[in-house]
Length: 363
Image (cartoon, rainbow, N blue to C red; front, side, top):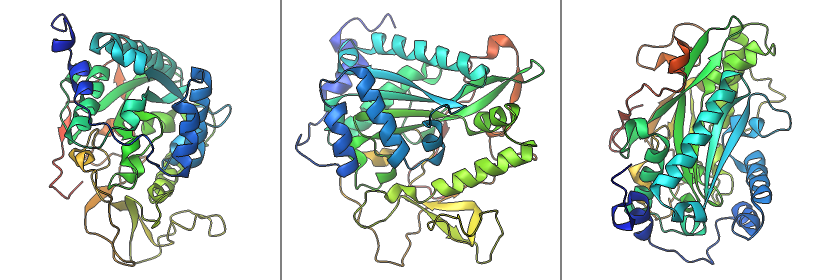
């Protein structure tokens, strides 16, 4: 931190200064334009946060987030708000704000109150910045300020934070929390399902923590039932990224297993975008959606969906870690099963970022 002595040495201010501004009149779809009436106005922060959470509840592709913003949700999601005034104060100030929010979130997570932290960088210049290497650089810098444990962060890597949960017997367990970035300019690009109003969002979310905390709170009769609900929620999230896309195409899609699998969806209630023969363990994606900052975010060109029913051959993503049994060896077991830890390890992020180059096409 001592090396950040001024604008010439401040990685955040330097990166922000290289952003390519876009047309402030550009539309990002009716849903985001409506949210921008508040988020990019002089409204108080409380109104802006409420507008963002309304957007989450209606338009966020991830069903976990839609559930977490409901009144009295538990585990809920926490929000850390960073605005242009914070960004203008540079890397040191932003990192201090982020670490305060991160520590507070983990304290609440230990009590099972929250499993997700949404860090909102509410900035008009970020919202209107043209996607390109300059925007990717800003996303990487901001992610590194949140996760100084492994900074500097590189593109096309999977970064994980760790959050604790105190089990009924008092034992602390550490769960892996995925870290993904969303940005306004993703609208209509290959990363359309990672669009968000208001600038840039760092989504830190621990599905295994959410699953276990829900079971510990007495909402399920057994751990397997809690895992099954989370698995179904994940399947319902696949294919939601096309919301707002004029061609109805999503950045993710279900892969048909070729046979009915009786996965557990009630046929009368199953969403139409979940086919009855959807593979419960795999789905397709235009890019590796688990990487924290994708190098493909630099592509500003609209993605042209193939003519139906053609489906592009891109990434195959896995959901087989949703299991109450032993987690497959090629997945981090802490995604679904907590690792026993001591109190002084409650704020650790012990997992080194894992490289997933954009030219590879396996999970």
